Length: 106
Image (spheres, rainbow, N blue to C red):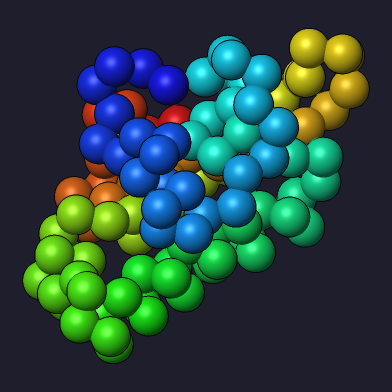
């Protein structure tokens, strides 16, 4: 991941997001790695959101903190994996509309 990201891999893992394969190239990996099919993207994202929701309910994270400091959506697109096959990548964004690496659009 680039140095300027809002959420590190460690933070995203702590929040329960599911990761695909990590190639080491952010353009291929995005925020959660590359996935073999687009059907895996939404469950990978929702696993993290579900964990964040549980943290709000059990009091380990405030609603305000979750609203301000966690991902609130993702954009995805098709990429070519290092082995030449197609893969799917997602980039997370916050309530400010900026992606994890600071960009506004993909």
